[in-house]
Length: 418
Image 1 (cartoon, rainbow, N blue to C red):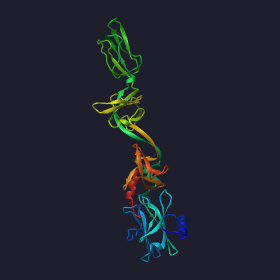
Image 2: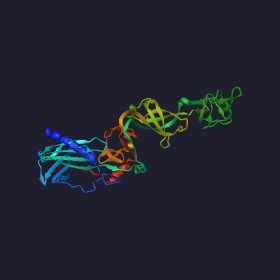
Image 3: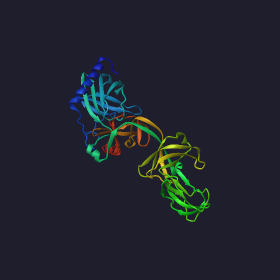
Image 4: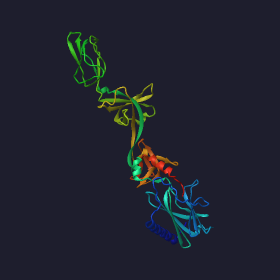
């Protein structure tokens, strides 16, 4: 490592020189949609596999060493083909990543080469500016070194269905998938029992008929007085059981119709042993109606204090609104039971996640440029997934048709060179 005022003066001069160079020259390395990510001219390589940079007889080989260790730059300097001792020159590399602050990389002598003090974080995709000070002369080089990057014009992205949005806080829910069956609410069922035994004279309603409260369902001749009396519904609803035939005898205390108010129904779900401890009253359940993408939300109203002997499952009941008659008694349904909710400071849509090399990534977007961002991920509810590192709140990423961007990068020849 270099010490003393000379080193600090060198750093100051390098930073000033790079700033002026960036302001005057800018970057001339532009890509069109589908352009190859390699430089147009073949990259010259040195004996250590690094990129060769030449300037007036001075040659620098800059290699990324990452075999079994965190990646660091190694620099080998020579003059007219003869190695230069690592202690006799100063150097600095400045890395400019897409959407990130510039990183100044310092070096120190290490045996036959200089090595970067800092680790070089993946992905190794950046614009590189190199400055070497040797014998009171500065040698500078600038070049792009991109990995997992492409440029797609906005009109092309729109035609391809590529959509982006900002990462941000989201409530991540843990979901327990459940299966069950629709039943009439026992709180909204009336068993219609005639006041007296007798013989049926009129049967006005049948299974499936809707009735109003107080509506006449049948007329029965009393077995005691031989006078006819009307049998009326006690509630408004639908007849789900029972029928009467003229001339049929109805005994005492025998129900003749069952009327159910189906504007509210029960969904009884069956949860296997081992998962019942995460369930309690008041939890939200999203129940599929059978129509693609349509759900109805209800709440757990009852958790059975016992397990069914045959199925070894616990009954969990959800009360569902059913004013539009989406659910019919006897229908099998599926549901997502929300067992917990936690706010994640940063989350992205699950549809935005792709694999690249051995990473899980999203495609960061800046203007028309897209680039991989490896992520460390946390909990997911199937729609949203928590981001622990790799992307900040407010940064734009591809949330729909991300596979199209991946295909474009792979087609373009995404590289991992330095």
